[in-house]
Image (tube, rainbow, N blue to C red; front, side, top):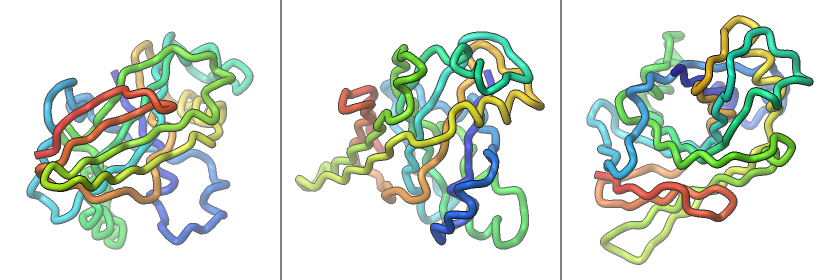
Length: 203
């Protein structure tokens, strides 16, 4: 299984519309990055700040390479809400230094992946992913949402041009530009279109 993460919104945080019009840019996340169901997310100690960045995940249902846009819908079998815990200070240092920065978003158990739900391809655009974070020592709830408004066909065409998409591969269709900082002692719930998909603790 290969996990492709579209990171256009992480390239620049100045909300420049020009970047939103560029072709998809992606990096890889190790399969070891998936947080297994029921396990907590342990905030690492290799950076001082970790933020939850939402994305819609698509699971590939069959083998394909060089997939034309008009056939993209045939390759997606299910979708799920996802959140990647990004080491934001490290990410900024790596970007500024011109170094590869995948290590800021790809490490063990960095990816919380909700339950995959089969969905007609023409209904995927507009899906809403949401994350609710509860502080266990108070009644505070932090909620963030991300509506899928991405060029799904363009993503599949671009990735499959140089890579063979295999059954079970996962495409994170775009990590959100911003997200809440997470701390030990919180509880989190991932939802897709308002329906709970995953619940886990943050320690």
